[in-house]
Length: 434
Ligand code: AMP
Image (spheres, rainbow, N blue to C red):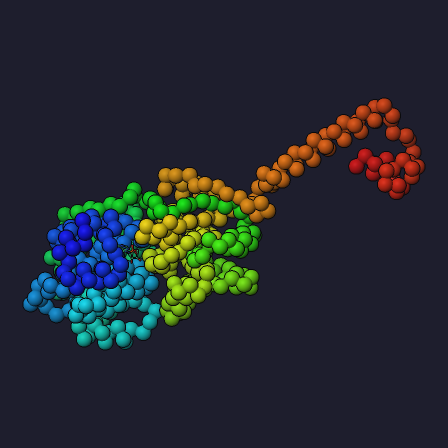
């Protein structure tokens, strides 16, 4: 169904056209009509499928039409997202699609001064995009009043629960009007998300794009078996290939991100880093430099990289293997977005093989193994094992020859004469045997 059949309104259709979208993605085609009809919705879709527009477009359409013209003042719609980066990205989507609409929007997230956010809220806004932590703070201090709210969106619900936002979400939702439309988006649908949906949504419609927990179909995935201390060197080796144009590298810890960034920079790679100890300004700059192609590599931890939308990521590298299988799905969803193919490479030292096994059970497929000679943890590489095989055969042959000689000519007693040794050096019979 083309966009014009959704009844979104001319301003939005023009914005969609300007964005260069010719047809809705599967999640948009499935979700937008249901949201436009006013249903609650659970959508299981990963980032990269166009899910943001699937809720932003109908929400803007409804706001633009002034659904309840004489409603109380205050925000009519609230979008909750797990991280500031995702909130900023949703804001960017809203600005793109809603640029011809007279709507006021506030982004409420931590890590920046709250005064400016409070000022915007006081002026009155139609729409709030927020992370739960900062918002609950402002709600507690009565800086924002959601009594006129009509639409609630929980984006990346599974991630919000993983990050421990459940109590905050419960407190926030308890104060919202019961009569509202609630949309929940999640990459996966574990039991906790199902339970959240049962409590917060009313007779929801369900949209599921792809299998549950299925990594995007547009990503080629494989693993490198590598010794832990050679991961950096292997990454450098891979980065030499021209196809590694825009590479997002995931690490587990902040200081790991710092170390790897220094290592790559010292080797002449253009690299930026993204983790939670960096200021909001530094994070946005790192993202922008990566988006603009000023750096080839962005090194990131999971928390900040979740849901970020960067076009043209050619490769995702799991430099540290993710502990949580759902993080894997999210990480690799940064490439192969919006119908472009991407590659996801995971470095798997021997100590992480159990995590790889758990992941393969989770995604229901075995990932292709690769090795680069000189980098893997196997005692011998396939090529080297041939050498080792022939060395073994030579050794056996020499041993047999020596044994034969010993039987034919027993070793003389007493010290050997120098002429007995092949190297010409003096030595005893023990040395000769060894
Ligand atoms: P999302 O899953 O919302 O993070 O979107 C992933 C990417 O798909 C973003 O860069 C969007 O701009 C892009 N996108 C969204 N809808 C469409 C569409 N209908 N056609 C092409 N690209 C789209």
